[in-house]
Length: 416
Ligand code: ADE
Image (tube, rainbow, N blue to C red; front, side, top):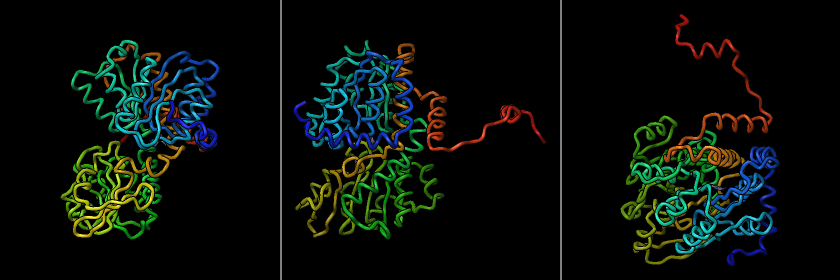
């Protein structure tokens, strides 16, 4: 595609080669399946953040025989050097570049669908929903799809609940080897990385407000505390709020947090979490960032309306001056700060997430046509398989239950 600059390909390949050294499970799967090629000739349409970690997944699937077309899953998250390397060195059809308009973003999804898929692979559900809305003629040929993220699962569950989902989706996000690692440690570290790259502020001593205490919010709160912040959590879910309290965080409504926060990060999957009514109470210098999939959590429209002047002060950091002279800084245009201002989740956690993607594709090619059109959990054995390989690649060994112990934990008899 003309927006991909082949001049960047070598730089991208160096980064992919680096990721390869940190992703042993994907390496293992590549070696295991590259000779038998269980998905030979199968076409995969993928809509994922185009990063060096995604490149490793594309390489693994391609080695297993798949023909892949890939578009970016966010207008600002594509790493252009990686897109160029995938096209130039690995024969992957890529449609995506950083800084797309909404029209360009969807036209790239349409280009991917030009190669009618057997499998869809999504991060946020734009590809799958687009097929269901506009490309229903492709559905017949599709065995199933995978979904990488919480927001995507939420949307596809709504589609299934409305009786409109037409092929099975495997909820990769909900694998334990995905959300307990990628969402917690991956988001936690990369969000702090993004905020620090975009601002270079000292996190220690800040009042650091995290909206949402799901897996991602928990990771962000944990890492902000590790850097010395006073962390405040806002929630709508009483169970999550209670977890935050018992984890030692302050919990309060956003309207109250708005007055004291220095840094605000949203990780809720919902819209209008920070709006004009909060911005009007904020301190001079407040920093706003979003870690959720869509750019709807911080109301950028409200900030645009409240601001009388606006200026980029550093890459991915825009200052809005309000009428009364207060300044509010918005990072990454309110899009995923970890992918816009940093590199996204580190390869060590994406290794497990993408091993789940890889194995789910194999599962769907084999069994997808016999599965119900609903959102399915990943098979339990898959989680354990991935965790075992990861541990062994890390040089860690664990105990095994004896036969006697197995019988004990499966028994209902009292031992008193
Ligand atoms: N989502 C979050 N981080 C990512 C990464 N590094 N690669 C692909 N998708 C991601």
